[in-house]
Length: 107
Image 1 (cartoon, rainbow, N blue to C red):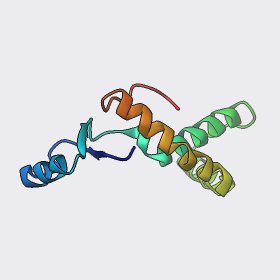
Image 2 (spheres, rainbow, N blue to C red):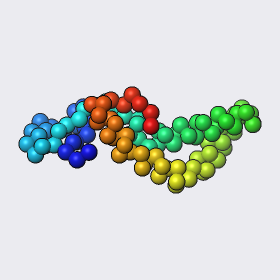
Image 3 (tube, one colour):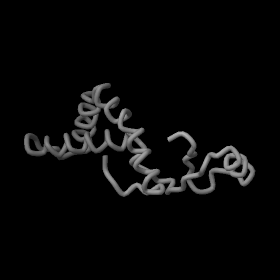
């Protein structure tokens, strides 16, 4: 991972790019929309799965009930689950770099 600078489009000036290249730091381009690099996206997916599982157990019929369910499920998320997603980031970044910035994979 050392020696590469991860940038979305338009996030680096020509001078910065030239300086980085002169120091051997290459630029890896990819879409600024990179959900694979955002651990909260994986937490949202976990919450969605848990709420869908609840549908088999209880019926959520009003926005108020949904708000309560969302809060309950949010409160159940543990620091271990969050850390689990964060720990995966170096591997996800390596895979993105190997795909030249692509993010068409799930971790």
